[in-house]
Image (cartoon, rainbow, N blue to C red; front, side):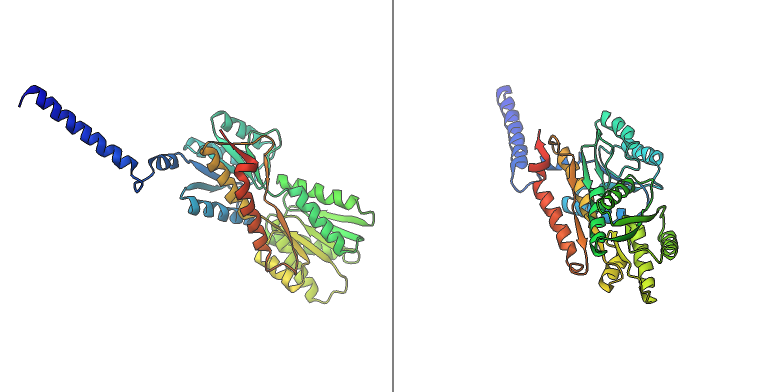
Length: 349
C-alpha cells in the first residue's frame, strides 16, 4: 500500500471514530453529560444544633429534597446548643468538601464569625429555623418569624381570655436566639392590652419531664389568679398539653386558656379533646426543603436578589376548627414559595 493511500485510510478511521463519539454525545436518548457532571458538583450539608423534635421535622423536608432531586445531603445533628460545638463540627464538614450549608445558628451573633470564615473560602450558607444577627454573610434565612409568631399566639390567647386577666409565660431555653425573640413578642403584645398582665415567667425547659414539673408547680402557685398560659417552644407546649389534660380531668373550676407552638401529636390530640385551645403550626418541613432548594439553585448559578434575605415559611393558627386540615395549608405555603423562588428571591448570574 502506498504512503498516500495509507495516510488517507488512517484519516478515514480517525474521522469515523470522531463521528461515532460525536453522535453518541448528541443522541437524545443518551445521558445528559452536562447535567450529570453538574450533579457531581452539589456538595450540600445540613447542620442542626442538638437533638430536638423540631429538627426531626425539618429533616423530613431535607429528605424529601434528596428524594426529589436525587442529591445526597450530608446531615448532622450536634450535641448541644453551644456555638463552639457548632463551629467545630461545621468546620469539619467544610474540610470534607461541603460547599453549601443549611445551618441552624446556635448563637445568632456568635455564628457570624463561623459564617465569615466559610464565606471567605467560597462556601454558601442558608440559615434555617433561626437567623443570624444582621449584617451576616448568610445568603438567606428560611423559617418562621419567631417574634411575629409569638405575637400572633399572644393575641389569640388574649382573645380567648376576653381581653383581660393574668398570663403565665412559658419559655423554652434562653440560650436559643429564637426564645429571646419570642419573649419580646409576648411582652410587646401584652403591653398593648391594659387589662392583661404577665404574672410569672418560667424558662429552662430542656426535657418534657422538666417542663411538666415546672409548669405544674407554677400553675399550682397561681391557681387563684391565672387565666391563660402560653408556651412558645416545642417542649413546653407538649408539657402544657399534659398538664392541662390532668388539670381539667380533676374538674377544676377555674378556666385556664392555653396556646402553644408546633404540632406534636400529643398537642394535636389535646386540641381535639379541648384540653388545649390552640397552637401555632410552623412550616418545619419547608425550612428543610426550601433551604436545600435555595442552595441547589445557588450551585446552579443563581444568586440572591437584593433585600431578599428572609424567606418566611409561614404559620397557621391551629384550633379545633382546622385541626384536621392545617397540614394542607402549610404544604400550600411551601409549594407557593417553591414556585416563586426564581422570581422573588433569586436572579440568574
